[in-house]
Every structure is written in structure tokens, then in C-alpha cells.
Image (cartoon, rainbow, N blue to C red; front, side, top):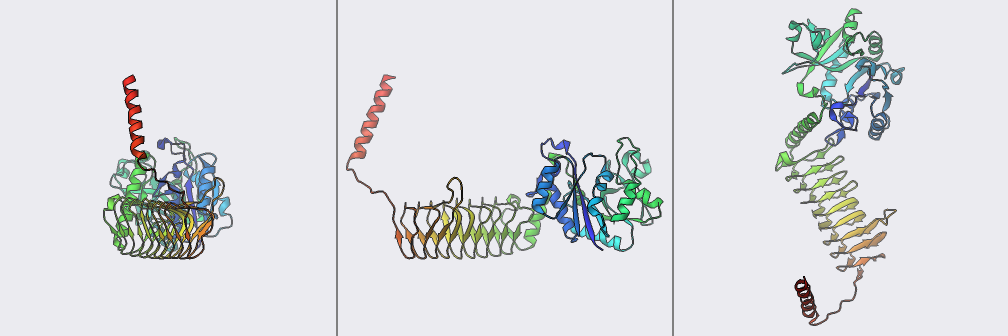
Length: 451
């Protein structure tokens, strides 16, 4: 059965006390709504609809940057969850499959849970609701079942004492045939204190129409919703704990696990060692048998087998390290290819460049890639030796096995095997240092006496 996702992301998030829409706040380097979409993506949906409201332009732009094919539907008035889902009707016009309703502020629903809901639908249930056994049911809506069938969802304020004693609670996630879902929503009214259209009402309507409803359960942690900054921080902690555990189970050594921070899409191969206080931003892939040393920050980069990064290194987007490449302390690499066995070991910036195989980049080297308007490329050949404090003024190339002398400013191409020297002539003035210091000390003494 074909599947469509409907992700509700229209809420303002007043408790966040933020100018950003709630779903734009990030966990593990990705907006909250992106986590819901990623879970649903495992079902290979035919269509994905994001229902936006507050900050619609901002949320829509971010969503399209992640998935150009996503369909944006706008809820101009926030009149309840059923009303929000109804805004996806036009986007799913002609779609003959199942729709799964997810929430942009609930990032931890697992793909396996959604697969279980899809299986229950395939087994004949007209409507499937995701529930969980709550440690503290509090004010959650209760799922009232009988003989394995879901009879109704009762909001806490409307529940009897007997119903409040039920610990099976509603997550809000729903799966049904799209046409059935919208037909049921058409029957939802707003005769309640808030005058809102609640998605939970579709269960009672479905049962009254002779349709079947069933419950799939998940761990309570999956249903964690984010409504305030403290909950956002707690969600980050939950994600990081899971990511660290998964990495170690997959053969990665985390020397001080609690100090390592992963992004939502970090990939690390087995037998890699990650030292303390390393941060992985989005878009990082680390192959096996590498070492990421302490206090390094990586984002949008790829490190091949045998690579060493850090300590105190920064890999920015577009950094590509081939096998056995070495990036040392206080080195920054941006949009550059560091080829096999090349070394950039100390206090250097290499941007918009290629560093050839087994080249050695001396301490303090800078690729001067930006002229104030445009970026320019630097090409360094295989086995080249770049002397300390070399400035490479792009666009420029240094050929294979060429060399630059310490302190050289390279402004034109250096042929293979050649040496570039570009220093000012040095003059030695005997005794001048002593005379100069004596003069400076005497002047200082006169100033102090005068004051």
C-alpha cells in the first residue's frame, strides 16, 4: 500500500519564548520537524506534506532545503489538530493509499514503530492509533480499549475516575487510508470549550460508522513532545545518549562518551577512536580506523580510513580527507581535498584548495582564497613541501615536488620541482638593539619623573 506523510508543524510554541517557530528549534543539528520526516521516510512515502502555520515562510524554506519535493500546506488559522490535517487534503488529491499523521514537535518516533502501524493497517484495521503506557499519565488523553479494539479516546478533563485510572495514553499519531481519514475529519465538530476541531474525535466517529480501530504501542520515550526550552535540552540529551550508545555498539571507541556530540546524520566506521570534547555537526562521515583527537569540530566533511584529525582542529563543509591524511592542532580545512598521506599539522588554514598526495604543509601556512568578492582555488601538487608561514595568494598552483621557502608570499605559479623564495632582504645592524633599548628606557624614565 502506498503511503503519504502528514506532518503537523503549524504551532507557534509560546512556551519557547522565541521569535522562531517551535519546529525550527533544533535537536542534533536538525529542526524538530526534520526528525519526524526522517522517521517517516523509512516507509518510502509517495508524498510528504508539511502543514505549516506560524512562521510558515521560514519553516517552508527550511523544509524545501531538506527535501525539494516536500509539499507545503498552510493552516492560516490554528483551529485544532483535525483542522490542521484537513489542510493536507488538496495535497493528497487523487492519492489512493494510507496517510500517517505525525507531529513536528515530536522527534523520536522510531521508523520501526511506524512500520508496526503500517502492518496493523495491512492487517485490516481501518484506523490505527499509536499509544504508550505512561509512567505518569497526568493529563494525557486515555485510549479506551475492549477486546483489543480501540473504542474511543477520552481527554483527561472529560474522563471518569475509572477512565483516568487507565495508563494507556494517546500519542496523537494516526494511520488510516487517506480518503477514510478525511471523511472522518469531515464529521468532527468543535463543540468544546476551546472551540477546536480535535483529531482524537475521529475514533468515536469511526466506531459509530462501523469501522475498526486498533492501537499499536511504543516506548513512552518515543512520544516525547517539545514545548519548552527545558524539554528541548532534555530531547538533545536523549538523542545524544542514544547516538553514543549506538556508536559504541557499532565498534567506535568514545574515550569520554559524555563529552562527544553527534549530529542527526553522523556516520562513523568501526575501530575509529574519538577523543574527548569532539563535536560533529551535520553532514559528517568518518570511515573506519581513524582517530579524531580532542577538542575538534567537524561539519560537512569526509575523513577516509587511517586519517587523523586534531587536537583542536576544525573541518568545515567540503573538507575531504583521503586515506592516511593528517590534520593537526589549530588547523582549519574548508572546501578542500587533502589527498592520500598529505599532512597539514600545525596552525594553518587551507580553503578552496587541493593538497596533493604526501605533500607537507608547514606551520602557519595560509591559502589566501578570498579577494573580498570571490573565492579562488589553490592547487598544491604531490609531495610538495610548503614552508612555514607561506601565504598562497589564490588563484595559484604549486607543482609536484616543488617547495616554498619559509615566509614566502606566493603570487604566481610554481612549476614542478621548483623552489619559490619571496622574502624581503634582511639587514643586520650590529649593536643597534642595545642602543635602541637604552634610548627607550631613558625616555620612559623621563616620562615617569615628569609625572
